[in-house]
Image 1 (cartoon, rainbow, N blue to C red):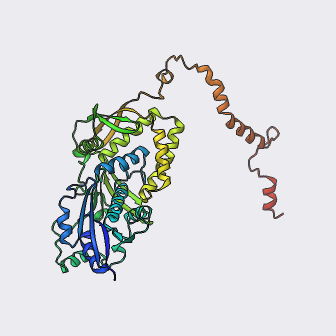
Image 2: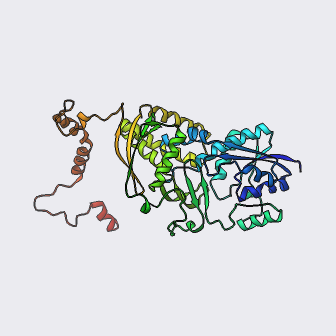
Length: 426
């Protein structure tokens, strides 16, 4: 077998720690590890030593936080994309930015292939490989979980021990599978696999239980420009700082929990619990501002595109003309979505209190129940007559089909002649 160079998306967890020696043994591979900092706790600073200890020949620790937020999170937010009614796509939208960087490193290092540690049951294998196909179709993709004989965490630990690989810091009795980044933290596995089980208090890592949240609410004001969040309580902040502060205050008040039974792309229903405090606050505020600024038709168009956008993100189809076209449409629709929204956080809820926009379709004179200079109530007569024309036409049609009987004759028990003939066998 000819030796190859493979770029592995590396997390330092059990799976990728075992994959490094497995690739070396089974592909005679020169393994280049790439770890992405997308906002998870601990970042990637301590992963280089671990990667080299398992046999990696090179390590790249990439800080992708700013790019992830600017080029992936914010477009998804502005599109209003939500999958399965409640999932704000935290894991899904991190995969294309990681994939893109893996491809860049593969080309820089002259690699022959790309590898990931995704299982054959999940969505992430598609998200990575669809991105690889779009960005570097010439590179081979290695997916160990679809090739090796390891079938459980116990097998993986045994494989590592047999090769003297240290797995310090990896919990052998890990109950939940978690994914964390700037936008959210997700929880799967363990007792959560049965949707009849309520999530225990040990599931949640970011957010307080709303029952234990402060008894005093907190009010905050978010400012947007063209749908981009730019201020918090009147203070201009970078997107990263703004989201970080919203995550903190939202977590304190128990905002952003979601317990979802979702449909994986491979056809399996799965159950996940998500914490997305800052994202929940931002989406709530932005959608409220849109209600003030966008017309009924524009809102309907945007709302029709949002689930389509969510599907393509969830399925890993980020690098597609479809996503680019929707982004262009959203950019046009959001041109005037500038203003402020005031919210109250209390016991797990983010409630809108007030909203303001310099370019608004809301006209107080027209909306008022009082006298209005721009609207005469009598003018509505013609509008109502025309608007009800289809209903009156249908009513007339139905009357015309009803048989006319002499006075005193009942229609009880009456059936059409054709039906009577059929019943008699004619």
